[in-house]
Image 1 (spheres, rainbow, N blue to C red):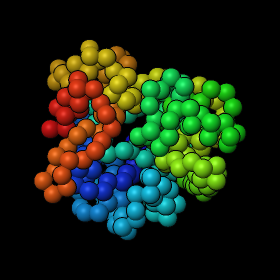
Image 2 (image 1 turned 30 degrees about the vertical axis):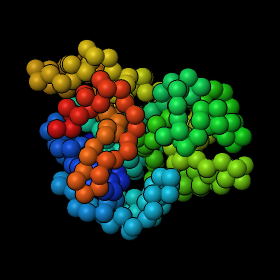
Image 3 (image 1 turned 180 degrees about the vertical axis):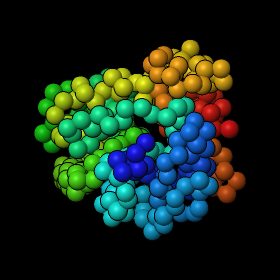
Image 4 (image 1 turned 90 degrees about the vertical axis):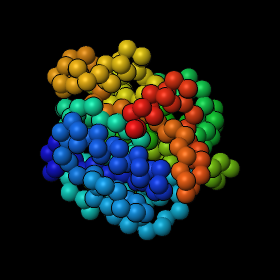
Length: 275
């Protein structure tokens, strides 16, 4: 990737997230991605450009906005690419330039939000409440689920995204609701992208997908050492980057870590990828 175009960054606090980030970087290096990963953290992480997380509280994920506005804006590149630590890289992403299109932000849009089974872990509220908050904020049409795991923001739009997301949270609080960062970023995405269809995850499944969007055969292909050539993966329409999700991890110092719920099958696959 062109370092003048993109800057990859993340947030990794605690032993489990730091370990996940180290695995992410190792997987990226293994397929030839040489770009630096800038990480806000509380301790050094092998292979990363580390920055002091300043002890900011998690605050339902909203410290992300503080990092974006105060620190990430200083990184090189025209587009800041946030990558959640719980990813695995299988090839070098191609054709990232057009992902934002004319929009100032890009979050891969998945299925209709109304079809999601549960959003409390990601959005802090139920599906019905999330849709109500978005509608109250001015989102029209049928909102889609936007997972805050891969987020691209143009440097020139950082202030606008910061303000939109922060104001959305304030209005939700005034209405008696407390939301997580995921819903605030989803709101900013829906308000700022002129053509949601252009941002569908399935439209660029060669770049990024969540684990749950891959069937067993596709997962087997990704795991295979025989088919590791980028051209082959792209011809098959398989993603360069997969969000494996958070899986239960037992850390001797921190105890059991609560994570997003995956099926037993998904947990086993993600754990194999994290070895």
